[in-house]
Image (tube, rainbow, N blue to C red; front, top):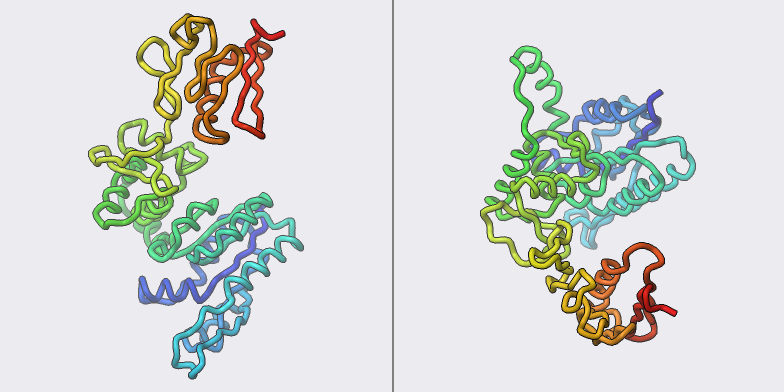
Amino acid sequence: MPEDLAIFIDWENIYISTVTEYGAKPNVSAILEKSREYGRIVSATAYADWTDGDFRDAPPTLYSNGISPRYISARYFPGGRSQKRRTNSIDVMLAVECSDFLHYHPQVDTYVLVTGDGDFIPLVSLLRSRGKNVVVIGVSEATSYHLIESADHFISYASLLEEERAARARDRAPKKKTADPYKELVRAVEALKKGGKARVLGQVKQQMIVQLGSFDERNEGFKKFKDFVVEAERRGLVNTVDQDLELQVYLPDEEVPAGPRVGPRRRGAEGGRYRGPTGRTIGRSGAAGRGRDGGGRERVPGGRSVRGRVRLRSPGGPDALRVEDYLQERGGPAGTGIFRRDLRGASATWTSGASSS
C-alpha cells in the first residue's frame, strides 16, 4: 500500500523561479505526477497573495488539480503599491500549517515542499526528526544548496519537463550507456571552478543534478553525499578540505588550502608511532624511549612526564584532545587502566593497571 503524502507549495517562489529561468509558469500537472511516485496525495496546498496580478489567474487551475489555494496578504512600503514590495509571511504561514498538519496527521509519511527558499531548512529538520521523508522540488539555479543537502530527495524542476519527452526518445533511440557518477562529479567540480562558484557539498550535488537531471547517492550505495565524495577522493578523482566551516571539493591538480582532512588519522611510518590529530608523533610501545621516559613514566604531549599524573598546560585546550587520543590509544583492553579528568581544573590522571593500587 502506498504511503500517504502531503504537498506544500510556495507558489510565489516557484512561479518567480520558473518565469525567470524558463520564461514559463509552473507546470502543476508535472509537479503532481512526480509527487505521486512517492506516495498517495492526501493534501495539497499552495500559498500566495492571489490578488497580485501575476498570481490572480492561478487558483482555478490549482482547484481543478486538487490543490487548495491559501491566501496570504502581501505588505507594501508606504507610498502606494508602486513602491518596493516587502517580504510577506508566506514562509512563516507555510511552516506553521505544515507543523500543525504534522501533529494532526501522524499517518502521513512523506512531505513534498515545492520551493527553493533556504528559510525552510528548519522545517525540513523538524519533519525528518519526526521520521518523515522530505522531498524538495525546485528550480536548481534558484534553490538554496543547503536546502538541497538537508532534504531526503531533491527533484530539479527542469527534469520534470524533460521526463516525458525523454521517455518517448528512449523508446525510439538505442540504449545509451549510463553516465559514470564519478566522472559527473569531476565534471561538476570543473564547472563550478570555471564559473568561480563555491564548491561546498550542496553546491556540487546541485551541479550534478543540473547535469544529470537527478542524482541520488543512495543508488550508488552511499547513505550521504559526503560518503560518495570521500570515496571519489579515495580513488584519486578529487581532493577535499574543511574550509570556512564547510567541506570544499577540489580537483587533484589544484593547490588545496591547508585544513583538517576528512580521512581517518594515520599511523606514522617510523617505529610504529601514532600520528595524532595535530601531526605530532606519540610513542605506541611500552619500551623506554618510545612512549615512556627512562624512569618508566608515561610521556604525554603537551604535559609534564611524572609517574601516574599528567598536568595539562591549559584546561579544555587542544592539548586535552591530544591527551585523550593518546590515552585511548594506550588504554588497551577494559580493566588495564583508568583515566580521570578533573573538569574544574587543568589536570588529568592516568593510572595504569600494573601500578594501580
